[in-house]
Image (cartoon, rainbow, N blue to C red; front, top):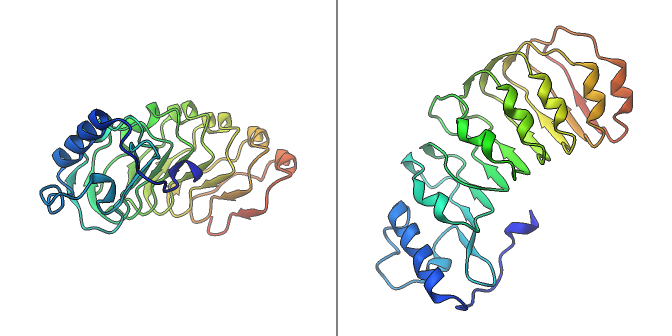
Length: 223
């Protein structure tokens, strides 16, 4: 995830930095740091670009509770958000990498996700998600890594998933999906990992999988 690499902070745009710090303070996750004179780029889990804009927030395993507030959406340069292993709900942001694993709050897949057309990585593992994977998953045409493993998803895998021709990793194991592997899966020629194990696979493996010449891992057990 090179877009989230740590770089040295400068103060080229003080007004913008002050505005970002205000948004972070209103989120409330850094209350212990916002009043002691520490620059927000040095707060735990916050990483900034060379221009001083917040590009990454990683607060995995910090015991956060409640909702993801709208102030996150005001961080216009934010590219990577990792809130794994917390007790959070809600989503309002514009991201390239979204990683929210091990969230024990039972919920449906947040509908806002399907509008994040810049996403390259979507990892929602062990999230107790239930319901269906909606057809508009096909909107996320830039996705490279798509993981929804160990949830409570049911129904069919929508055919629109075959529009995600940039996918390198598709991991949906540990759900209750009535998986039909369609011939169109042969369009996912970049695919390296395909894991549909521990679902309710009822179809034959189509001959079009022979087109997946980059495939290194095909996991279908437990169906």
